[in-house]
Image 1 (tube, rainbow, N blue to C red):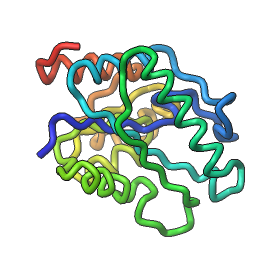
Image 2: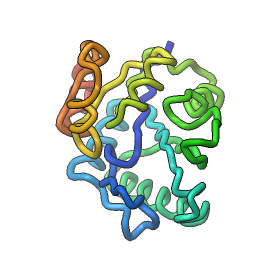
Image 3: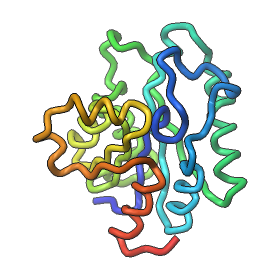
Length: 187
């Protein structure tokens, strides 16, 4: 049972999303307050992991090297402000590939469990899509929906019963402040 892990989706939660995909570090632009949110979570003692579907790889829109550069760029921004992303997990497959890792499947969450030798059960999982919520619920994480990225659309289109126990916040910063307050930790 984990309480110190925080799992974050990437596009639409940490950085701006695009229907034409984020293909390189020049297109990777942090959402307002997201870097600060990760820093507050780090200082409060959380282990931050990113779990992100990256079907742009399967579609040939960018390659593994370009993805690694985006992730290094993201990590550098976080570290320059005193935060840390411990690990980044991504699914390189397309939506029709039938893989085990593409959210809402739980393969990335199982990779997190293996790498950190602990269950993700009760870990907070912050995302902007129903796939994020479904993956979180499948592994007994505590999902949070943010309204950035596809979050507003998700909120308006999802079955309200599914959201009944899911906290909803304007952005990652507000979600992070809630998580820190909920656990009684200080950032």
